[in-house]
Image 1 (cartoon, rainbow, N blue to C red):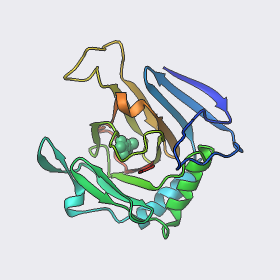
Image 2 (spheres, rainbow, N blue to C red):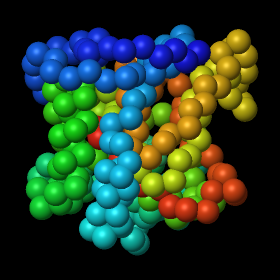
Image 3 (tube, helix red, strand yellow):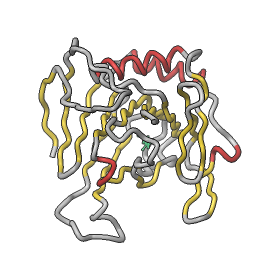
Image 4 (spheres, rainbow, N blue to C red):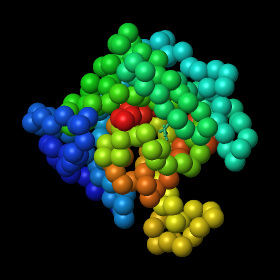
Length: 235
Ligand SMILES: O=C(O)CCC(=O)C(=O)O
């Protein structure tokens, strides 16, 4: 269920060391997605043409992984990922998922990334300092991301995952873990969809990723590229 409201301070709370608490200085128009154990906020972080300008900068500056780092392991077999991917972050940080270990490239010399990171942290009232971003580029609607939960143990469990979208708008779908193809014990919990607009910020707060899978499905009518950046706190 989606509602719109005007808030000045996001109601996060977190006791871990990596959290920085400061007074709220900004107001954002926030759309809230709420279901049982689904706690997600959505807002426009960058208006056009700023969003388009950031997209162009990333198109110029990002060098995506190739070789082993462009693959995932599914049920014991390696597959090329149906999109491009790269990670940036603080020195020495890496992220393990789907059998891979993604080392962060240094973001200190990529101004567009630092600008987006700061805007995200400001929008979240500086309560979280992100040390890692996973960047996915979808060349068109045939590139996609399958259903998964970002529930790896090295992710700080009190922190949200903050997802910024640039370029072509794409559908994004949440499915409860007990209402998927193989387990339909909670058919009352319907999938929740949202169209991620360029310049938007989607904030997936705990415990969303424990209970809900998310995906970016194939959309054959989408002909243009999109870049998504998921800011994370790796502990
Ligand atoms: O491109 C998107 O919006 C999905 C990204 C995502 O699910 C992820 O990075 O875990």
